Length: 163
Image (tube, rainbow, N blue to C red; front, side, top):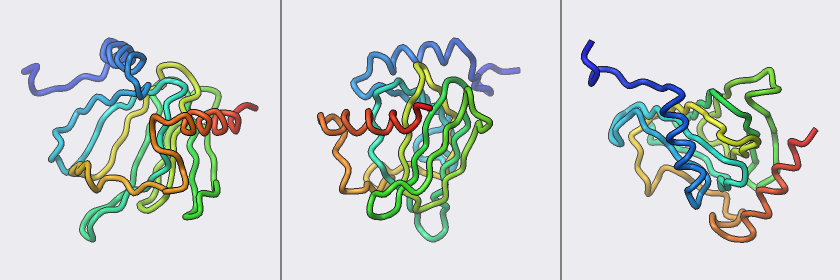
């Protein structure tokens, strides 16, 4: 088989991207299997504890679907869903020490992810193409990424998953 005809997801790739995530200011790193204009986005997202994912939702034009599917491959993650006022409406833990390994979030649902273990690896699947200027609609009452308030928010969310 022609090597360029396949793309492998293996521990070597995970280890490489995990090192990049550790050294990233955001404490997370994606590895795309798709090209940005592709109609199906598929990638691994490797997250470290302390990363801040500002609550957001995805909406797409009428002929597209804004769902997002996460499948845990390694580690564990907390998923929080919010209403329009920023109140938590649902929480779920995925991965190690959980019966749940994946979740699909419907279009228009505000959500965030909380890395609960080092080198947490998720496979993500959603409809594209990726358009950075319109991909996410953020909940305005939550702090912007990179702020000290954002780091406090991460600590609050992490505490929700300490059983």
